[in-house]
Amino acid sequence: SPTVLNAVFNAAQFWDGRAKDLQEQAKGPVQASVEMNSTPERVVATLKSIPEYVAEFEKAFPNDKDPVSFDNMAYALEAFEVSLVTPNSPFDRFLAGDDAALAGFPGDQGLWVGAARVRGVLEAKGADIYGGPGTVRQIYSLRAEVRRGASGGPMLDPAGHVVGMVFATSLDDPQTGYAMTYAELAPVVKGASVGDAQVSTGACRTG
Image: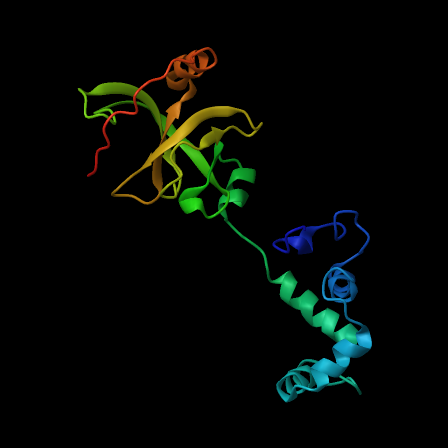
């Protein structure tokens, strides 16, 4: 279902735009048979059965003869949803002009997407995963918060094209991350399309 985050900025609510505003939208799930499957009368009766809710409705709607009403329930939900905005979130920064988006499934906790700005292209030297001699890789230095476990996820440009691969975060600065450039990945990607020979995974390393 559509997110409630920033829903106040939508021209209409629900996927098909059938609700003109958040107050009208709030009444839908409450009555839908596949969701809360309730009725306006049952909602009001339930709210009036809880003294704390009655007191809060009287405080919120002091000029209403009957503050606990179905319309006021929807209005209260609308007032809450209006507050659910995400200023300067990673996605907002991406829309505002950050160079790229990073994606992955860190910790098997679902899809993560974050914004990134390319600071520069570096030549980084380091050991490979098998403990062999140092190798030089072309990488992007990013202003980005890279979640632990997101290595291997794609780096996407504003058009959605893969332009790199996330592989590290800085130990010293949580706002610095790194991704391999597409130029670095291209030979591997090209070879993967035809490679079918078995290879060893090598010995695991820790630390």
